[in-house]
Structure formats: structure tokens, C-alpha cells
Image (cartoon, rainbow, N blue to C red; front, side, top):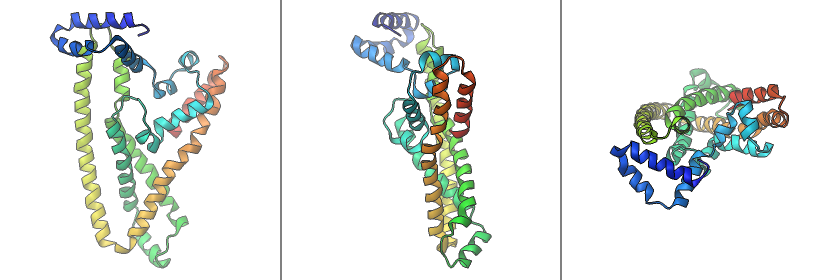
Length: 273
């Protein structure tokens, strides 16, 4: 999609081969050529995630970002707070991204509560009700790992960027509308599963936390502190860990014979993100 003429031809081809869905094209044709061109340009521009996941050959060709730009892209795409609230075009629903932030917090709250055992209660009594950070550190780490694992699974059903990019890259002239309608049906199924799973999980969270709060009155502040620490840690650590991949990626792209460094960058992205 490099010119307005190509876009015009594409619309004409779609209109001829999909007469049954010509009503879709009619609304699109009401837009000015400049507006249509800007929409197509935006849709076909590679996202940050696409650039970050390129093969070495593709990165040499398309990725001309600096170290700082790459670092920011990792934060924008993978840091929960920035990903949820920073305005960014990435083919995901803005409302769902914001929802995921609060669902993440609810997950951390629930998982932390699961780690409050009789032994934990006994330690709290021994310490006179004070918060023992060292004793609670393993619990905070384990709860962070489990919470992040649950949230990653939920994101698979919530986010649509990968699906849209696959559609965009595989769509051919004359079949774009039909494939788009199929994609829309897939999204409906995906979101239905997402909301059903979320309702079940949130219901379980609410029941367990309500019972926990009713039975263990004196440990509620400890639970809140554990949750805030583990959740806050998950928001802070990416600012440090995301510095590493770029140290290998950017030098590898300045010389065509440094594929090994690029592969280290890809492994680090896989491990840290």
C-alpha cells in the first residue's frame, strides 16, 4: 500500500468480487482519498511488536530504531501500566487493555491470599502483628510468578493484535472483506470465551477473599501490604530488565554478521517479557 492509486484499485477489486457486501465499500468510499490513504497507511505500518519480533534479516531491513527507541517500545508493549493507559495504536481494544490492568491487580490480591497458611498466621502472631518483609519475601516472589502466569493466559483471549496482523499479512485482493468478516466472527468467539473465563475467575476471587476477610480480620493489612509490594515490584522491575535486550540487538543490527547477538536479544525478550 504505497500509493493512493493502489488503494483505489484495491477498493474497486473488492467491490467487484464481493457484491454481496458492497454496503461495506459504500461507507468506505464516502471518505476522501486522503483520509482513506491515511487509514491504510496506519493499518499497514508495522507495530512495535512486529518490529521487535522480526527475524534478523527483517530487522536489518526494517528496524532502524535507536537503543532508546527500542527500550521504549518494549515498555509500551509489555509494561502493564504503560500498555494499559498510554495512548498507542496496536490493534487492541483500549477498554480491554485498561480492564486488564485492574484484573491483574485482582489476581495478585487473590494469589497472595492463597499463601496465607496456618504457618503464616502463626508467624504474624509471633511477631506481634508487625509486617516481616524478609519472611514474606518468598511468598511475594511466588505470588508474582503465579499471578503473571495467570494474566498471560488471560491476555491470549483478550488481545487481538496478533490475529489482526496475521489477517493483514495474509489477506489478498478480492478476499479482504470475506476474511475480515471471518476475523470478526473469530473475535466474537474469542471475546465470549474471555468474558466467561473472567466472570468465573472474578467470582472465585470475590468468594475466597470475602471468606478470608471474614475469618482472618487481623491479617487483612498484611495481605494488602503483600499485594502492593508484589504488584508494585512487577511494575518496577521491567524498567531495569528491559534494558538488557537492546544491549545485544542494536549492536547486532549495525553489522550484518552479528546474528548471534541478535539471537541473544530474542532469547532475552522471551525470558524477560
